Image 1 (cartoon, rainbow, N blue to C red):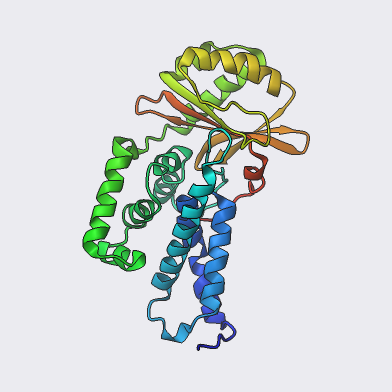
Image 2: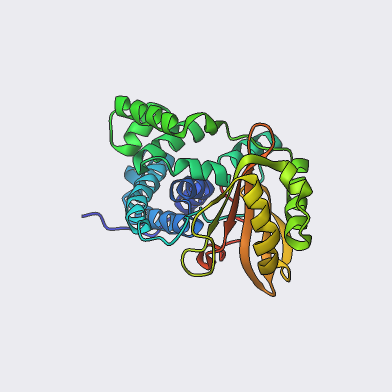
Length: 300
């Protein structure tokens, strides 16, 4: 049996250089930053306990170990989620990145709440294959090795994933100015009851979803349609949030807001646009467990 040895400086640096990539992969598979951090830590422990001298491709080994751990966690999480109270939404994150503008746009589009929600349509293995091939640009041969399957199976998994995700995978991203205009309109509706600007920016079939996880008050079913949505925002959200502070932040690569009461963040607000730059989805995360990791993180 192999006896683990202390990591050398180069071995530790090899892992740390991969941490942002592993974190980004794990977050996209799991939809939770806290779970992603656990998966990356488990990968580190496995790396520290293996015969590293026998590993020809450390980065490939780390991606494989992290992916397989995430798939296991995802399967367990899916079973547990059957008992989740109300709508489930991904855990919001603030992204710290040193990429250039073009790479930044590509990165954040695949970290948006809308994209993560589209991934929810996939099985854990489809999700991993799709992300590895289409987002992380790995070959089918490499994906097959990572998932311990054949190259033909990898192609089928990716093809099936694309079919399940559908045309929405284009992931339209409105301009920053359009995003800020919507935030301003939404805030005016909540704080002052003015809905004219908000109603003009909503798609006719816009939907608002809230995730309280059964731990805080939140709507259990999505509100659909621009008219009922505006009524909800200007009446009920007005009563809930009128005395709260709004902090504008970058959530999952887009402008969003944290709704604070004193020193406590009680909600995170984000949204998604359709290809006509109308708001199609509004996401409100209220589950306090998902509002504890809002410091900026560096992931790929």
